[in-house]
Length: 286
Image (cartoon, rainbow, N blue to C red; front, side, top):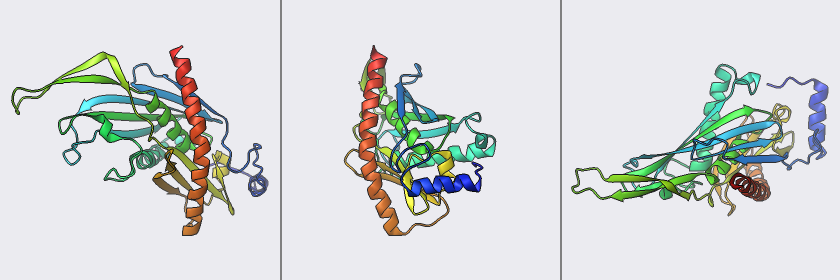
């Protein structure tokens, strides 16, 4: 938790009420975003994202596996987050473990939709090699290096960038001579296909402080929140996932208004992330 004096609290709350935050931003403005891709050579895809003083790394590892019998035409994705104990004092011990689980669950919900897969922002069908027999499993790991608020949005941006950087080997399958024999699989070391990220959403968290809500809250601003809503929104403006934090309840009309504002904010964020990701990939190939 961030320890603030009563004067500092009033300064933060007063600035938000006047649409002029302590770092000079307006309520719905993000801090500067920097993106670097290909930071982990042994991964299929990776990215480092920094937003203000919050910095994270995301990596993607692809492995062949068998599809879930209940979803034979879909591959599998798992997301796990680790908070480095050196990133913030609250990450030491059980605090970091609990936050890691909370972030992992929120990211699963944001990118993969419900248990049925409805609303998923990642196309699991594209991970199928042989329906019902062979698929790709994507293991997505996030590491929080430093934290100054808005971790979920920054991790979401890093995952989107890492998926855009992901190359999945082409697979040739030789059919088995009998149903009992496993098919022969030849994984190429030279040919890869880029993972399709056209449907991958961005995550926008709106933090309610007093009567107003802000985007990309710092740790100090988060310490003054009554509640927060995180929406994962794709480029078509569709909601892929929704997460609420904070103990204060929200009127349904307020939630709908926050979602509407989140959609508006997501358009600009999506454009900026796509531009930064393209620039990072161009630097990587030079």
